[in-house]
Amino acid sequence: MTPFALDEGALLEWLGQFAWALFRIAGMFMVAPVFGARYIPARIRVALAFASALVLFPLLPAAPAVEPFSLAGIVLALEQVLIGVALGFVLQLVFDAIVIGIQTVSMSMGLGFAVFLDSQNGVQVPVLSQLHLLLAMLLFLSFDGHLMLVQLLADSFRVLPIGAGALNADAFWLVASRGSALFLGALKIALPAATAILIVNLSIGVISRAAPTLNLFAIGLPLTMLVGFLVMFATMPTLQGSLLFLLEQAMLAADRLLLLVS
Image (tube, rainbow, N blue to C red; front, side, top):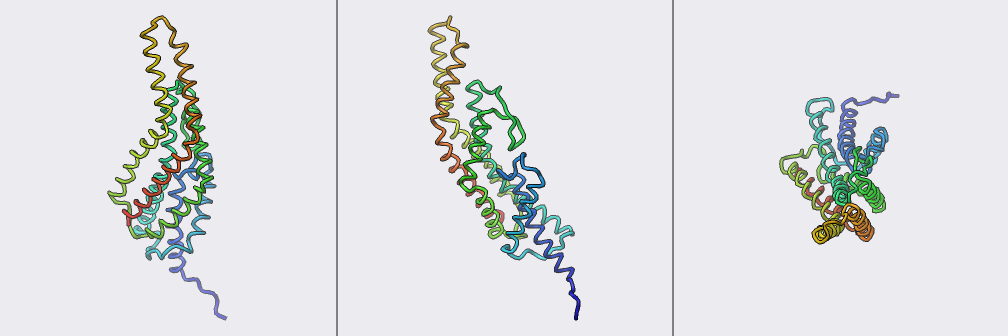
């Protein structure tokens, strides 16, 4: 009986294809919402990336025959990491827009000093921003957003196979231009409460001119906080629509990013 012979070249090729797919998936999981949160241990993220690579690997198109430990293999691995990070970053901007929008409202209400550690990014944000971020995360999971991320990864390998292209100037410009979408989403979320607080502040200014002896510090801050809370409570149902709109725009931007690279 002929003993089983292991082809070293075929094994290295298989490991290289699996490793390059793992690099793209791990790069996305480093910064993607939910998966890239600081409260998820690094080992768990690595395990999730490895499991996703095992699931997607049989469905991937053939990768170029490049030695994994050669210079070309290292460059190819870095390209896959950058592509994954870019895709995850585009989606993460959706939740950053929510944080910035509510942070603006908190500052206007006088609650800028009430900060809390954001477990998603590891920075301090106002308590109201953290509340809306948690609600957005729960809505994201209820929309099967985690499955959307896996679907985006699978589509990325179909649209942009391994070795078919790298991030070019147009792709970097697209990622940078998503910053405007970040502030646009923040404005969309903060506009109702910020407008109401602005009207209250203008009214307080008029009252201060009419009654200079009135203690505005004892009236203005509680009134501003009350109006801000009421408006935010009334507009809370619109968070779902705003999140869906921002996610849709982010998914379109991710698809366009893949087309630019390819």
